[in-house]
Structures are given as structure tokens and as C-alpha cells.
Amino acid sequence: MFWIACDNGWNGGDFTGTLPGGVTWRDNYDNYNDIVNETHPLLEGFPFERSLEGNYASHGGFDNLNIADIQNLVVFIKENSTYEKYPTYIEYRYGNGRVIASTSPLEFYVENSYSDSDWYILLLRRSIEYVFNLPISPVE
Image 1 (cartoon, rainbow, N blue to C red):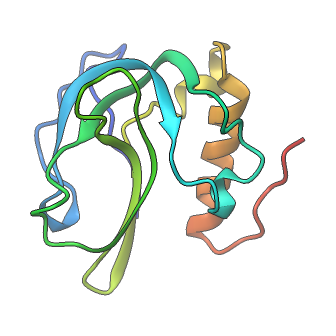
Image 2 (image 1 turned 135 degrees about the horizontal axis):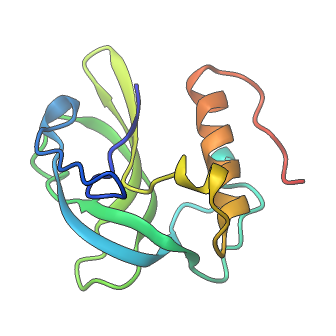
């Protein structure tokens, strides 16, 4: 499952449910996110020396990963501006499935050009490829 779990965006939605395994998040806008997994193919070629910037790079952070009923957690990206530095892009196993979840509005950058839009669009493209076990797009 690929879930873009951000809310409180331009359309005013406020999702209060949980992701598979009971994963929750708390709302918090952050204009900068830090890449913390430099070895994963999804992030190959990304600018690791600085934060990714966006018009609300993330809308929250996953806050209960240590008590959720999940396995094999992989954290890709975290908040930059908060004390907790909660993860904003994760992958984990739940039952027989795999969940990839983001609190970044990846689809927003397809139509709206802000700071690191090209990196967010590439992350969206690669995420879809990754979910369907397709070859990962190179950095252009």
C-alpha cells in the first residue's frame, strides 16, 4: 500500500484515522525535511547535504512507531524543524503486506512549483515504481 497521509492541506481535510498496524501521526507543518536514509534506491542521487524544502514539505510526523503493530520499519525522511524530528516518509511490514507512507504532499508538486518540487516529483515517481517492483527512475 502506498499512502500519502498528509492532511490539513488546501482542501481543508482532517484525517483522524490510523494506517495499517495502528500507525498514527500528529499534525505539524514543516517547510524542511531531512533525508536520513542515504542508501535506499528511492533516494539515490538526492541532495543529502541539505534539507529538502517545500511549501509545507510535510504536514506531520509519524508519532507512535515504537508501539505500533508493525515490523521492519525503514525511515527515509524526517522532520527538520521540530524537537522530536518525527519520520515523514516510512516503509514497514504489516501482516503479509508492505506499507509505504508519507506525510509530504507529493502530488502537490506535480502542478505547483516550489523550491525542491523536482525532488518531490521524483520521489513520487520512484515510490510508484518501487511499489510495483518496476525499475527506479534515474536522476535526470
